[in-house]
Image (tube, rainbow, N blue to C red; front, side, top):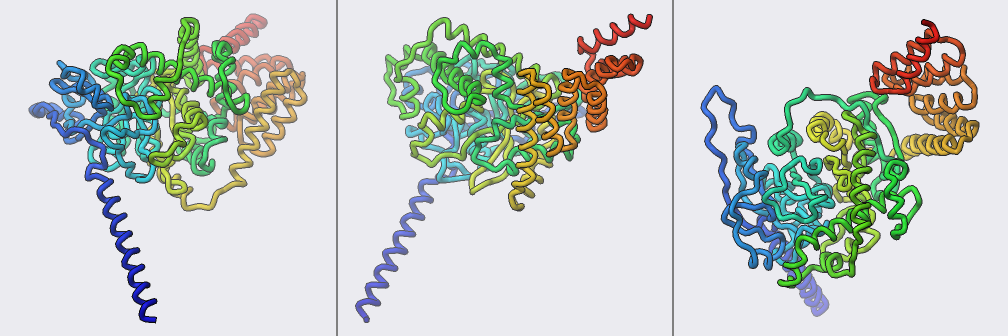
Length: 590
């Protein structure tokens, strides 16, 4: 008995020793700065102007920057020691960095990036992988991993990164902070090591939306405009269908915030994959590329392939001579990208230019000046440190399909945290048209607090599967109606739209769409009634006014028809069909 007791104490002692050893290793592995910083420094702002002039806009704020921005007198590492050893110190400081310092902020450090800023995991075996404060056993996201960690761990107020194919958006999503990718070309690229000039943007992180916005005003140098509310918030339903987060914790949080702040009439739903297929014809020239999944997702997967190919092609074009001369040791994820046999023809490069132009036009047309597109930032939770999941084709494809939307179109995007699900950060992203950066930052400022409140409520509530499935079912019925309409099956389309209305009777779009099908079917009284209902739900529904005007014209109510066409023109002065219809009727009665 005494021997058994002694053995038990020995085992307990070994167990406690093991626990202490593991604890010490964990403490040692999580450095004081979470491994975010490469080099501490101080770039101090100029003295404050004398009163009555206002102080510098970024006074008292500190920031860090990813180690690929030029700072006079020092060499950037670009995520690899061989780069630092083989390059001369910069002769001047990046204009983006200078603008922030002159705006009153103090730069305190440079931060870790992936090897040559080419990964989305944020791992770096040369300088160490920064620890994700939100999920320490998971990757922080890349390429701008150190910058995101510095903000997430409250070491700085904001940080600069580079976003080519997700270098700011992914770590923002993985670390649970705000991350902004501006419109392509909106912030100067001078003094930054290029990765892929067609896709590179200077992005930034913060926890506070007002700080993100103030930094944006300095970097974007955008003229002051009166703040506007969104006229449309469009949910990309197909993008939310396959993510590993319930809808009531992601898209439904945005839906409820929109209804609370702007009213239900502002909400729209779209199948983004189908929209892109119809509006980006040059994608058909890439249809021979391998894609997985359903047809409706193929356009996004094609965009992902084009984005990855373009990044690889432009990186090699810029840095291939140095890579072949120095032959740096590469991480597995970067090695796969750069050493894989890869050739792009001149025809494919020209086609990618057409796709970028068409994609920008398509998103700009969809959103106009005051529209917001809502998508998930990332499809999956952050992978485990050192794991192979992030290297898989499936993981890369799922992530890149979402990231390619802004990268290829050049539009601006902001990633917004929505708390945690299953112990990992979750987020959504808002996208605005190219050049709509200030509008997007203003919209973020307006919606952020409400989003956080509703995300917190959702995290404490039981999943509302019935409500979500009902709304989704209505959207699916509407999509079936749209397809039937395209196939000129009017009665079938009416049936599907009726099904959508039964499931969700307060959606103006469903009534307006059914009215159009009724018009084609020759049922003008039903069309007029549906349009009237749509207008009662959404006073700014241009299509409903135009369709009611058309039905009234067919019924012989010409004066009322002219009034409807005029109302459509008030809401949308560039509507050529309404203008032509109103002119036609006026001439009849002159």
